Amino acid sequence: MRAARCGWASLQPGFTDALMALVFAVLVITLKVEQIVTGLAVNLLGAGLSTYWLRSAFAGHGQTPTIPLFADVPIPGLSDIPVLGPILFDQRVLTYIAFLLVPAVWLFLFRTRYGLIVRCAGDNPKALDVKGVRMAPVQYAAVVFGGLMAGLAGAFLSVGQAARFVPDMTNGRGWLAIITVIAGLWRPYPILVAALVFSFLDALQLQIQGVGIAITNI
Image: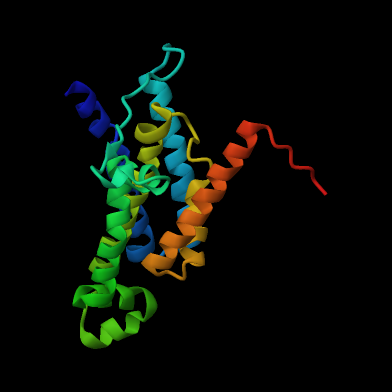
């Protein structure tokens, strides 16, 4: 039980990122600061603050303490399927949630009135003005939700893989997430395919290194 509490507590960076996203939203939506410059500034701020808090909390300890990893949750029956079973149906809870969020977000964006409003806020905000819908609350909600999801993705590196937090452990994956969204044409299912392709290539290069295959530069 204690390990489970520690594991869920380690997901708090997800909510911290939602707060950082709120700061970004205030600067961009309310104060009209250029969003690319603001994004870079908030990114640098987050990296600096996380390193500062880490060193302040564990100064003199040598290294950060380990945290309990989330255990794999096999789906009975499906996880026993040869080859695909362990890959698709023997994962951690956050992995299942990530897959389930894809159809949930698709249904929300393309099959609900509020989803249409969210898409208009990004694609054609003047249409919302004509309809008398306030854009700012919609944009705030979308930005904060995106920050929460990004934070949970980053936290998964600690509770799902490394068992501890280290500075810059994301190793540029946030920028890769932006590329994934662009490659997926801003639509949930193509984005999922792009994410799986990038993940496969990332895992492949690790496996190639592990078995000692040398790739010569031409």
